[in-house]
Amino acid sequence: KAGVTQTPRYLIKTRGQQVTLSCSPISGHRSVSWYQQTPGQGLQFLFEYFSETQRNKGNFPGRFSGRQFSNSRSEMNVSTLELGDSALYLCASSLSSGGAHEQYFGPGTRLTVT
Amino acid sequence: SQQGEEDPQALSIQEGENATMNCSYKTSINNLQWYRQNSGRGLVHLILIRSNEREKHSGRLRVTLDTSKKSSSLLITASRAADTASYFCASSYNTDKLIFGTGTRLQVFP
Image (cartoon, rainbow over all chains, first blue to last red; front, side, top):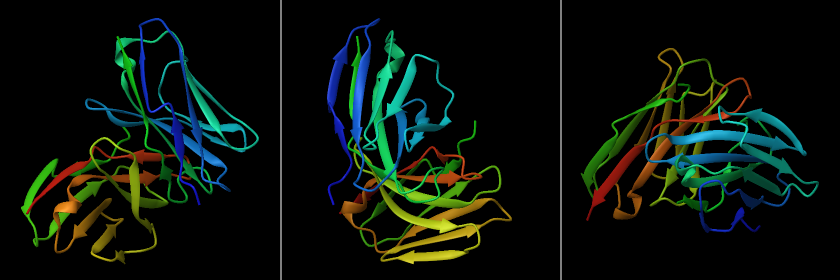
């Protein structure tokens, strides 16, 4: 099976712009979770989608949003970018939601905001 | 914060030695998982241990879970240079979401 893929791998944006990140899960996985990883805050949970529905959301402002399509692919959008949004964004797919099964991670998208 | 705490934050050992990392969490869990991350890449799942299990093995890895102390440990035996990575525990609460700990950076010297 192909692993989790994320595009783009690297991105440089300017403050105030918006960005969309994409994640394709492992075939058959219906859960996609997104995480933000920074040196200062570590791995922080953004949100999880299961069968096109947002199941859980972390403590992030409304500028962070996402969606999941019928083929389980997911996108994450960040509007009005701030310098503090610079991070590695990881998506993970799983058979079920809520951490009941192991998660399979993509390589991540490295976002730099200048 | 809901994050678990990992101890130590960093660990340096020689090849062939054993490495032990500890994780503490805050509330009752459904399961606890361990992941490895190499140099800012994606995480790789190592082991999942359920709340009704006390010990689990996978190759050179041994994970224990003590629900009375709300803690888990990961033991890597006969470490290799290739084991150099960051190791994270992640707790699943009430099938809500997976919360990751702060991580342990392991350096294995040849």
